[in-house]
Image (cartoon, rainbow, N blue to C red; front, side, top):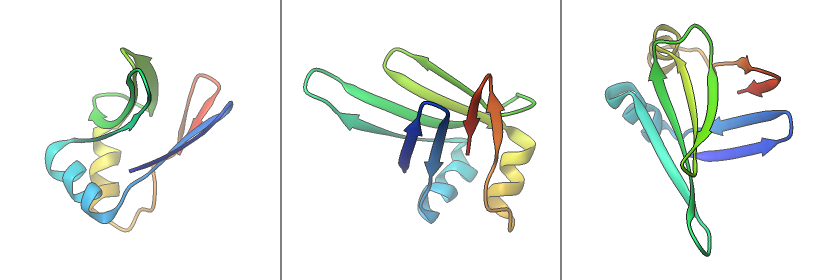
Length: 90
């Protein structure tokens, strides 16, 4: 999974195998090793009405609506888009 960030947006790009893992398990995670600790990031399915981003315990987590994520993981939909506060989530 790739992560791309700037001051206004977070974008997660998944490989087909990661989409399949997300479809079956409900989440996919990765990490970037840094000298003293790792930055972890995770995409998770949840009971939310729109995508939500949070950062806690060195983990950036993006939670997407369960219904929309099921449609995305199994159909022709290319992505899930939303806003969390002033942050665009792609």
